[in-house]
Image (tube, rainbow, N blue to C red; front, side):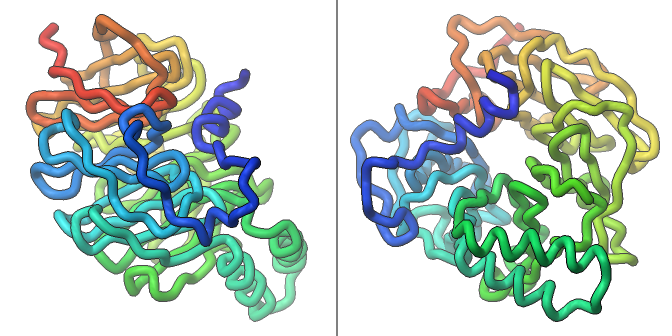
Length: 346
């Protein structure tokens, strides 16, 4: 199985045996919450962690992931990523083009966008643009999306405030909101992504937003032009994630590959991660320690801002899709659920 297929399998797990629409069916309560597929973990304030994953399941923990409480979620689409901007306001994205929001620290969630509405918004947006060859090509893609239905996932998100943020996903899907999800604006034509490659991650560094994606795609937001422009990292494999190291941007992806830039993406340096499998997730501790985890469950740590990484031995390794670091523990999520372990001492 190729690395990008692993990501897809970890994130795509909709039950085909049920006739009910996951956009209309609330997430079911389960006693096996900690064993469900988890694809995203985020801090909500200084103490709380919120995890999201399969079939709309979201849970929160106030003890560094040792105990979890299931949240009320109004849909059962698989979720792929979650972010909180403070202790109360948070967002999550996922399959069927869904975006949900919380105003109470992740205990309850409200729908903000789904693929049916997103497809219509995109089509209307492109029809209103001036005629051009690019517009006609994108319009054709939007019409195909509408005919296919809400089958395109959002894979990541980043909000710069409680109201303003982007969601990104498969086949160049990108939408912006400036009012907390009440309204959305497509940015489909504002990316240097003519092949409509998948957008896997969006993160800030040094006050600038970056997007990483398939086949070496990496873009930076040009605030003046209001467009994401392509950067050349010298790497053609897929980037699955981005991490702000504090003074640099780390892009990580297939077969343990990673690149580091300290100058806004103009120059990139190869980083030896010590990992062999595709790096699926990364985190930064409050003390500046950086953590990388790959799809085999191997873990690497950096204490020099990402200049070098070293493998961290674990008693047990499980496939990892999400990681969060607290002051005393690491919380890991993946196909086999959630686990919380003490910070490795060596």
